[in-house]
Amino acid sequence: IEAVFTPKVLEGKRVLITGGPTFEAIDPVRGITNLSSGKQAAAIAKAARNAGAEVTLVSGAVSARIPHGVRLIGVTGAQDMKSAVLQEAAHQHPDIFISVAAVCDFRVENPSAKKIKKEDSTETLTLTLVKNPDILQETAKSGLCRVCVGFAAESEDLVENGMKKLQKKGADLIVANHSSAIGQDSNRAYFITKAGAEALEEMSKEELAQRIILEASNILSQKTH
Ligand code: CTP
Ligand code: CA
Image 1: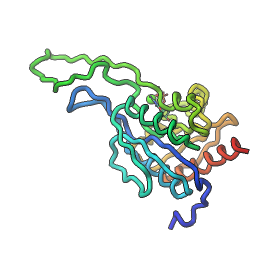
Image 2: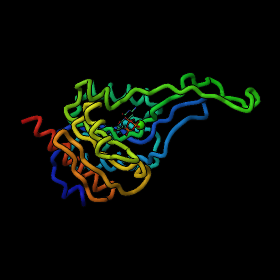
Image 3: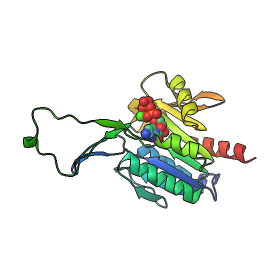
């Protein structure tokens, strides 16, 4: 039903989305990840599809249902996610890229090829972590996508931190939300663009997804005309 009533503002457009958590291996059976459910990315993929777009979702492992008609590329670590995104971006030249994934900021420097045995170590085990690439920033700076949208998960100073991320990453829109929204059903966010910040009321992830798609398509048409 909702698909029938959605204005087809993205007919013939391509939308590339990242979602879910990344998983950074420690050894073949363990890793570091986070509580991202993939719900917000699935809702955005669905809203983009309903708006008529051809949608590709590059996602870490999630329990959220992938909407019908959305092409899924499953990935594990941030490095795999980055290669998949840049490869897709180079191939399809998306009209809109939306970075929803909760990318682990760090990965294990030297993951073990074999399962780590507790007998082999003493009472402590030290892991060295190295910084992951910033997928949104690299994709935005690549110039392969016309409009780039990111999120900012913050525990404080949402607008100020969101503005900083907008500039640093070279995005067109940052959706700043409270970090406690991770894994929840609703979200209260700000839209941050170079024009300023707009506070949205608390809404479901589905509703927020539709608002993001509308905002991104407006930015796209401003860039086109
Ligand atoms: N992001 C990304 N690659 C990373 C880290 C983040 O693409 N390695 C993207 C996220 O998908 C999101 C945006 O960047 O769209 C902001 O993520 P966030 O975690 O809020 O910000 P960081 O830049 O990682 O900074 P910090 O976590 O220190 O606040
Ligand atoms: Ca981060």
